[in-house]
Image 1 (cartoon, one colour):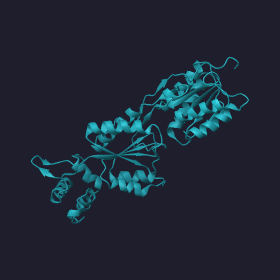
Image 2 (cartoon, rainbow, N blue to C red):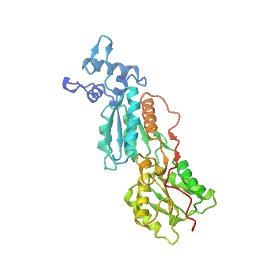
Image 3 (cartoon, one colour):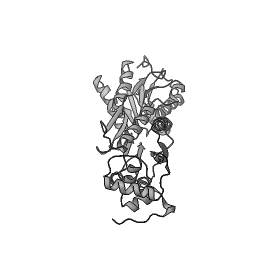
Image 4 (tube, one colour):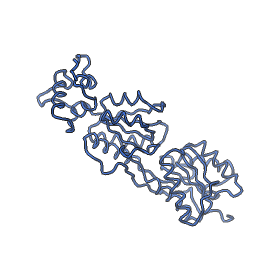
Length: 343
């Protein structure tokens, strides 16, 4: 492909890539010292970088440009967002990498968004609780920009690496805790029905009941969408049953707070009349009234591991596994107790 002149006013990765007849990702690999570029292509790009003064030259040679990755969330209202960001930025600071934080577009295809990222010279992208379409995945593959998913909503392609927590084990541990206290009418308020993590928690809940000889009752499974208001409404329905549950396992802490509020409004005491377990161990869990028994997710460590794994991919190094799960931990506080004696 013939070279196109790059004007002095456009000394960007995109301009260099156009002049060299390669992708922006290939130029990014060269400026970041990666080895997976052919010698001929590398020499051509390095000469263009010097010719157009893309990187300043000094006594020690060319200085590296700022290395940047993008951290994209589906939304910024989730209380876990800050902890994940903390983990990512801590690991990035150790590696000398800057982090740009963004929100995924509402457009289900997100074509323009994907194109912007792939043309921006990012070293890689971390997507959090987002749904990656086949078209977006193809665009990233063609660009060579590595992806790392944290708690993807849909089941990712086996070629796309992802990281999360042991959601099945967490759901099982929460339910087994309630079973050991003596509960048998244990309800579950799910999160988003289409979320991969929600399905794993539901299966853990069902496995624990079955293992204890308790047949899961479909009437005790409600949807809460990982939000306070739907969980409150679901709890109202549960408490109105002829045989209401004596315990409720929730898809996250926000749902648990909705259940606790519904119990208060209906004159039920937590945990004397009904026990409640959450999932996540957000900052509010330890200070709620009563302090919430919940399943802790290691969000900061998930963020750190995601960043380090992404940089390995950007350096052309393989990962040990394309699906990583970090251990959850049951944190017992004051929102759970044995069931009322009259039950």
